Length: 408
Picture (tube, rainbow, N blue to C red):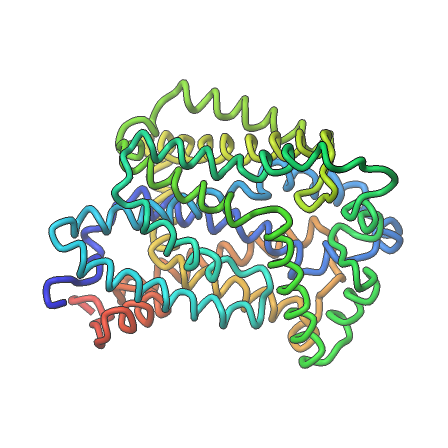
């Protein structure tokens, strides 16, 4: 495809790179709960720590303002990227789609490799859903929004349809394992999971990660997460098609309403309590899912409008510019977050797994963020792409691309 080339740095939309960088900073606070071991520590041990009360307050705060919200933003931006690339190549769509499908396949392989060291990988899922997103490329704008709502709320509709056929009594699957630790598995005790990460060999940790991966993908079936992610992708595609990121993202009304609705729904979901995996479904848990999804979407909109408004101020623009290189090297930073946290917490590294309070864990997350901001800014002074972005592009276009800047 001689006329199709990767997006040049000068062609990128800066605010979208800033949003990607911002999303990555939030994602680390979600992932570090697992990689640090905090989510796997049995409550019997957590309650004995002197910082337990403060740690649990921070944990619930993260559930309200972080959990699911930054992944939603990251997912939207994935679809935005597809829309922009497709728009630039409308006159040669067939050639572009051939290359884009190859691009997704390479991402799928990168995600597969990432899964082997971290069960929380999202790249593999993104690549799979990306193939489905392509099928909606010519859908009318108004229908895109309808399809988005359909897939977003399909899991809830399925639960409602199942509700008359179940007379839930006693404990549900989710409740059976909810009292041991923040994250539990039906076939292992919280202590077994924690001890394997803390004291196990590299081989034992590897197989435990595969164990977690299998349960995670099984949970996708129970929660119908595939449908939700597709709905988020379509929402991002719809927003791009309607020019949201050029105009409406600066709306003060949206800024305030999304904050109020998003926080209200997220706090209500946290107070009500529930699980995406609860089976059989109950009316209370269905309501929890609706509140959780509503909070997820609206807080995501709040973060977008917040970044856009901050970028309009001189101080905000100066600070947010440091996030731009993080967003331009999003793939490299996403993978390197996993590697850095594994080195810090796992027992073949510094072995801080389960040793730190959540306050200290958040301090580690902030330190990693600062490190990635510094390194990303320095790297892009000399290179056009992040190292993994460069590999991804080379494999996609089947040729060695220049990585150094022209003036370096």
